[in-house]
Length: 396
Image (cartoon, rainbow, N blue to C red; front, top):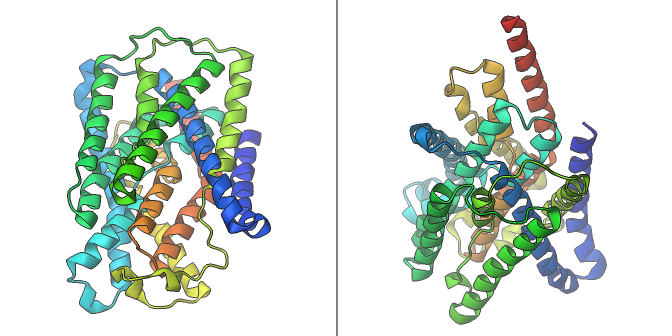
């Protein structure tokens, strides 16, 4: 419980710093420092995902089960996305409801509600002592598939916005190559797996992904830059390592410190929203035509969007009927966590000139879920403990 509280405090501290430091040190100086902070964030994420991949056990004979899991993960990602999209469309002028341009802008922006934060979720659940539970094992599969589905779907969503670019094809090829390697080379390569080696692999992966982005951005411009999310390559790298279950105290301490740093940096990655006039940022985007809103109105819409986005994540409750209701509820609530992937979608939306109050609502909804992450994990832990206790009583 102490670690969960500390993770939440580091996250909130990062959020506070993200809103206060730009004013204290100046926006330009903070923007320069933020580039370094983002690299550190991706490195921590890669470190966490490599370790998750190392522990991932894949039984190829159960491929039908994984197909079902992907289907469930896809629906779990689609439900909150479409609920938020329809809600946002209802806030626009009635004549825009039949406008494809308004729909495609909303489809992109509202996608922030779809992905579960695999990095945050795995870190919190593992430190809550749930690594050996069915909920953790199943969440690990669903959250990876959930994020994978978002990465894949971002390709057609970006095509809707800017048309076909060959760079998007490169992203698709990298994703499918990663999936092929993960499936065919699982647990094959003997590699050093102490914390310093894993950190080194993480730095190399981030350097490759960020280097490709910077080079393609300079050559082809921001709209045509090749952006590979480090999450999937890091996870697959962990998968193809020959599993070693022994860890030293130094490895555990380093993993804990990096996890704390990751939570702080996730908070620090939040865009500045305190004192920002979102109505002025609407530009020519159709979703900006929602009109001006007071902060009180925005707060109401954030509460509704938070409710809808988490209601959509309850899909796993309808499946896995061989498990208890408590376990299925714990699984669904675990999927509530949002973070770095959702924030990335908001950044992409900003890059396409989308703005206005709907952007503010999306950002604040994401932040509300981040702040509530500790509460979600505590609820999940209590549900798992109750389910396991009940199961033990029945067995006795």
